[in-house]
Length: 575
Image (cartoon, rainbow, N blue to C red):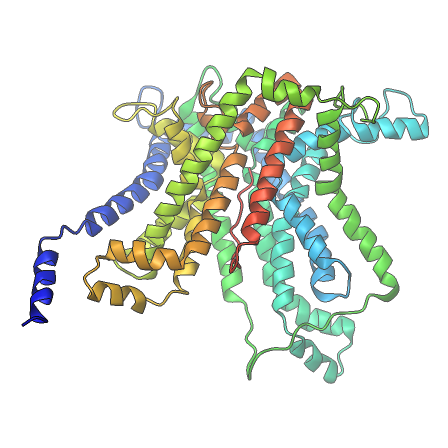
């Protein structure tokens, strides 16, 4: 009797317990649907109506017939194709050198590639503007000093279509490099040894074994490079507009300048969205269809090829490649931050802290931008991680019907370019009943939506490492699903949860494409402040803010990489 009474009391206590699990889970599901479906729905609606609200296809006809839109379309295609080819030409041999040869300092090389990966492309464009502007660029000044050329001659002009392609390629090639290097790392030497035993030479083995196995990764990397070059806004806005031409992203942005043309902006955004979906689907098919399996046990580690006398040319090639997105741009930003004139070489005698003082203590927008950036970063990281955690739980544990639809919605924003999402959110929240434009809440929605796919994929993979029996044991003892997730599963995933939080935070403070469509004077963030300062030509303040952003980014990335047990990689989305 003494044993049965406590059990009875526990049963009675459980019978009066209110289970909030399903209302909370349904709330998260509804939030996910609103985040994705609402802006895309308004985007489609506005593309099919005129200014009076009447149904029409005139917006799409104007895109096809008007040279004002045809030229940016063709320019965007040219940039994307050329950048994709350039990235493959550079990243493929570099990935092979790092993964399959005895080249020294490969860990450092990979770390420097990561540095170019996390550098915001718009900041890289500003740095190359300091380096290669025709009249004032540091490299052109050096060229004139060395050769004695007259002042009107220059070596490089960054304000051209080739200049824009070059800058975009500098910050897109890491996507291709990572895919190729990882693919080559996974190819076991057994396969190449078998080819050698059967009489195949080095070139035959490479042509018949190594290259076919790495080719899917190369093709997927080419598609990603094409996609990234097509949807970038920051670099074209900084380099193409002064040169007098548009890309599709800058043209969409210009349609919201006075007088605004939201219908045309919506129509121009849909082709970018459709092409993005097609390219991502193509990448998934390429990576998913081709593969290899080692039969009979664990494959041997890749056998490194000795470079011999080719080592010096190989190191020279890698050094030059890394100079373009990392060493030279970082030097340009540092020089501009501490030089009295951004395009004058800093020395111990003319170095100054004026730009730092002006940026943080005299520029009125800095405090507002810093406050908004850190507040939005913390809120986006917290809410985004929480949303991704719940959705990952529902899909990994197949806890609800339609879990595959939830998985699709959680990953769908990866196919939405930032500028397109900005247009969709602008159209969604500038009218009753929910007017959010002009508040930080619309930026918060944009940031959470953009970073949700990376957060979801990271946590969904982490859930697979936690056996569901632990949650089932908790539920057998009377815990609800929500409490089991909070008290059992989430603590076991704390490393992945923390890493996801940090990466969302970093990605948020770098985001420009959506923010530039949604900000007001009171909701300005650091990335938008840098963009505004570019229009006023204050390169010193830009460099100070840019270096501050980079320092914070690398501090967080290094901190996350040192978390015990952290082995996953969360992708950072460039803008």
